[in-house]
Amino acid sequence: MKSSKSIFRIIIGLYLTLFFAYMFLPLIFMTIIAFNANDIPQITPWKGFTLMWFGELAKDEQMWSALWNSFLVAFSVVAISVPIGLGGALLLTRLQFKARNFVYGVLVSPILTPGIILGISTFLFWDSYMDIPGGLWTAILGQSTFISSYCMLLIMSRAQRFDLTQEEAAFDLGATHGQVFWKITLPFLRPALISSMALAFMQSFDNYNTTLFAIGVEQTLPIYIGTKLRSFISPAMNALAVVFILLTVLGAIIYEYRRRREMIKAA
Amino acid sequence: MRDFWNTALKDLGKIGVAYILITVGVWVVFMILIPQLIMFDYSLRPMLPLRELGGPKDVWTLKNYMVFFTNRLHMAIFFKTIWSSLIVTVTALTICYPIAFYLAKVARGAKIGLLMLGLIIPYWINELLRLFAWQIILADMGILNQFLIFLGIIADPINFRMGNGAVILGMTYAYILFMVFPIYNVMESLDRNQLDAARDLGASWLRIHYKIVMPHAKPGIAVGCTMTFMLAAGTVAAPQLLGSPSSFWFTQVINTNFECANWNLGAAYATVLMLLCVVFMFMMLKLFKVGLKELTQ
Image 1 (cartoon, rainbow over the protein chains, first blue to last red):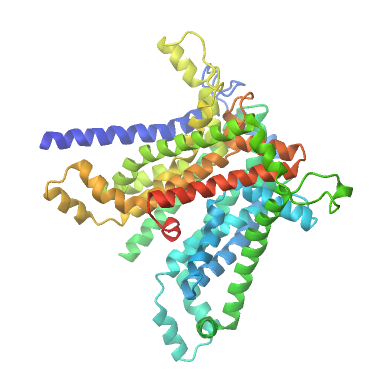
Image 2 (cartoon, chains in turn yellow, brown):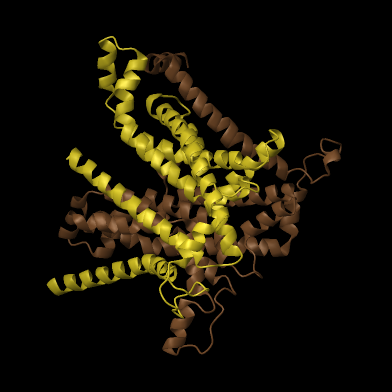
């Protein structure tokens, strides 16, 4: 019995090791290559350690303008998606109506729709019916269509745990709707609102499929990366990947730290 | 209906109700419904020069769809997209189920945090960059070829990007984590006591999974499969970065239609892709016997 358990342990350990090797090795290769003085993005032949690819990346003006657009788009998406998500979450958690399940289905449908469909439909609508050609604005709207659903789900999961008697008590004591919202509901939802802002920002910043069809001739960072990777591949892209990976690792650690602190608080 | 408005106004106030109506109204009407309907409308109209728009020729027709159904090459590409996405989905499910179970029910303490971090980091890294990593690995002079030559298994580099394998490999890598989190979420709510009880009563390991864990995890599996399939079938990036120039994928055909300024045909092809994903989702709901509501929890 005991030996079969330890064999089981070994198998699990091996499986996890293989899985995480599969997840991380490609990223590690990509990182090492960013420091190889070779023009071709490969590990071999190793031509010495260099930081020149980071310098090359920093000199690329296209990259900077794409990065600027990405920030612009991401902040706009946050500004649109979080209020919409809040509206949807309040609708579904606070109001009782017969068509609730149907409305729920409609509001989450953008998540289950392929990104390119959202991009194409947003582009066609604004270009031909509103006379606004594809650009940052259509990219913002296309992305917000599905990012709002993510924000709604996040806010809903917290709103469902809300203790309504708190509001009732406030009303009994003569509070107005505005006071109840700002003093009770909003503070309760704050953690969910903050995480939905972060999620919306990241989703927007990373988005390729929807943006590609909606954005016309403008470029966000992923569109820039896509164009570069399809034409001439330079290790400067590896340098960019390293920056992305570092920021992601940092973000993930902060996220995990916050989550744990909250869990300790809750316990 | 009247009761509904009365309670709504009593609970949330005029401003609250107005806020909900405006935000959700704009979202549903101008961002979800109308764009979809317009894409569908486009797909039903022939491509016409500007001066003939709204003229006698501008009527609804199934011509664009007929173009698709009579084009053998495009049909073949469509089916290739379906079976490749199925392969990606099944592979992701097979690989992720044990990981999700381990994370939710076996691992304890600090280990969970570390493993979570290990999943979140690659999950958050841009899709294009994850595919780029495989572009590097699978290149003619890439790591995999170098490694195989070093081992003496092959003499000359293999062109991995010739067939469809590279795209499928890339898609699996890029979208596999969309399978882990939904399954993990539902498994976490499974009561450990149920597993212990079954084990004490002598149920085998296989039987515990088949009779207890899997039925409990069904909604998560259905979400994971739907998301993974949708992402794989709808990706533009994977074929762009890893596909061979001689073998197109369905999203690339859609893209080409738009690049050739035939928006109507492009819209028809996009509608076909949309329908495929909707059909797949309903098949998952039926297969796992879960409701749409459970699907997105």
